[in-house]
Amino acid sequence: QVQLVESGGGLVQAGGSLRLSCAASGRTFSSYVMAWFRQAPGKEREFVAFINRSDGRTYHADSVKGRFTISRDNAKNMVYLQMNSLKPEDTAVYYCAARGRGTTLVAGAYDYWGQGTQATVSS
Image (cartoon, rainbow, N blue to C red; front, top):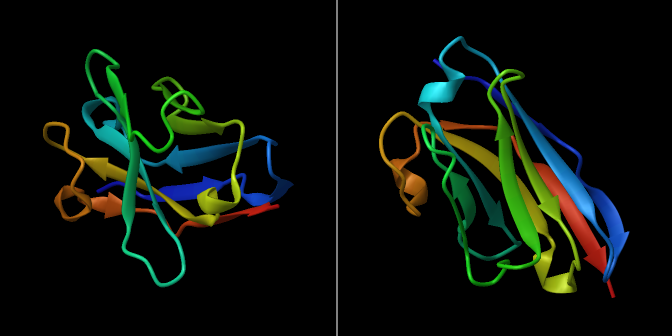
């Protein structure tokens, strides 16, 4: 069982930065693939990035590639999403997710979810 708690959201102007954090409970954090998803009002949940459990390999959605960076600190049971050059279309609730198997972009394949943190980018 893994519990996830996101933080770090807020209001920022276009071009600004935010750093989202996700704190995970449990002793086996390093065995989970971790990911960030986002959901804007009236839209489906969208994959943002994942980071692998063993080799730390990362993958970012094309829409955020070069602007967002996912990272993890297994010693602290933390996952981060550094978001730079933010755009109004990045406005969404951002969710942290964990999966005990291989990497995937599919939201339904993740086992555990946080409650989400709101990020709002003004133009």
